[in-house]
View 1 (tube, rainbow, N blue to C red):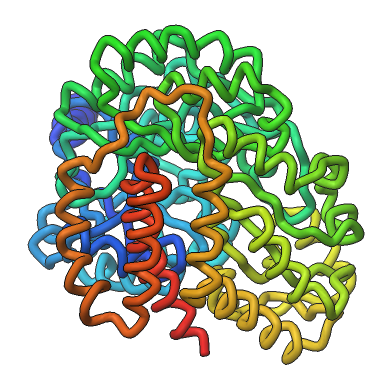
View 2: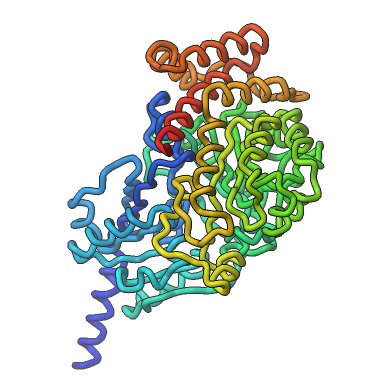
Amino acid sequence: MILSVGCDIVTNMKQNYDKTKVLLIYPQIPNTFWSFCYALKFVRKKASFPPLGLLTVAALLPEEWEKKLVDMNVVKLVDSDLAWADYVFISGMIVQRDAIKKVLERCRHFNCKIVAGGPIFTSCPNDFIKDVDHLVLNEGEVTIPLFLADLKKGGAEKIYTSEQKPEITQTPIPLWHLINFKDYATMSIQYSRGCPFDCEFCDITIMNGRVPRTKTKEQLLREVDALYKSGWRGGVFIVDDNFIGNKKDVKAIMPSLIAWMHKRRYPFAFLTEASVNLADDPELMQMMVDAGFNKVFVGLETPIAESLAECNKFLNSKKDLAASVKAIQNAGLEVMAGFIVGFDSDPLSVFERQIEFIQKIGVVTAMVGLLGALPGTKLHKRLKTQGRLLENWSGNNTDCSMNFVPKMDLVKLKEGYKKIVTTIYSPAKYYERVITFIKEFKPKRSVFKYRLSKDQLLAFLRSLWSLGVVWKFRRFYWKLLLVSLFRYPRAFPQAVIFAIYGYHFQKLSEELT
């Protein structure tokens, strides 16, 4: 009799497991320079990128489970969603902390079982251990199967963690059907994880290791093919920590990616992140351009040699950064770049030197932030030892919040930071950089036709009124368009995009003051 009851319990548990309903939630990201919130309205999009991590997690869950995804950056989380779900899977970054807390409170009200993972939960598990039922941390290919096996048996643990860095050759294709492509400006895919460099402030090596792991050529082609067959056309962000971290593997996949893109008449425009040594490899840059890459984000950080040495950015300290940027842009890849102030070695002149450096190299999209000590990094450990860490950090390095006591006077540091941002994104300085970029942007050969896409054309038409008539800085808008149209006509589509981006950056810089 006891055995019979036990079998019934196991059978019911198995049936309930197979019928599990999962709600995947991505909390709202606050407005930052990288949210492009003011620019998105011109293309009628709600967010820049979809939550790739959760879409991949969804693909790792049992196929028979019912799944819904709510990206709170594009849709509202309604009570009926929470009432429907057996489990809520939630992920996010440090900058989303406040939004995550609010979502967790709503989930508890509906007695949802909460499974949490991703960057913020892996970095700060103790901050949430009382708020969630299960923490499934580190890389999902390892920890999610462990959680699912225990859940199926009816005995899931509180925390699942692993230091293992798995090969990602078996990582599934994200479940694209869970989102509406029309909500997003750009799609995302991942080719590799990890970075061979070890900058003091960076948590990439903590999360993903120093040995870059790559997907196979066939795997990458299946992923881009899945996007293509789903109907996506436009920008695709390869979100790798350092796309060229394993140059050998990257070069090996490029001929196939070039052939795939050529056969389909270049449906995508790729952008990615890479280290500055990309400039040393003309062959690779040309292959990237031939494959449809048109943008690359590079962490330049600072022109201060002592600060580069301080943060172990030795690769940059050995380079002529201005020459490297010029080489990349001459190859046909627009350089977007990150810059940091707040290093212990920064002199008071750092603010003027950053402005001069950014203007000189013609990096139009320059993301300047205050240094932050991310949990687990060497910087965080050093500052903790020195007793300099602070609490209540927003995680946003562009809102003047800091989580440590800087060597420079804090008031001077914040004033200097604001000066950089308000200066480089003042219309005069911004459009000066755009012209510098257009002059330097001389690709040897490009696969792109120099005309506006449908979305760009609609954005241009909308900008004619908003920026060309209503905006108080409209004279710079017209100057840019006319100069590009008559002197650099093939750069006109890019000039339209820059004009709209400039409006976004200028609006956000005003909010800093």
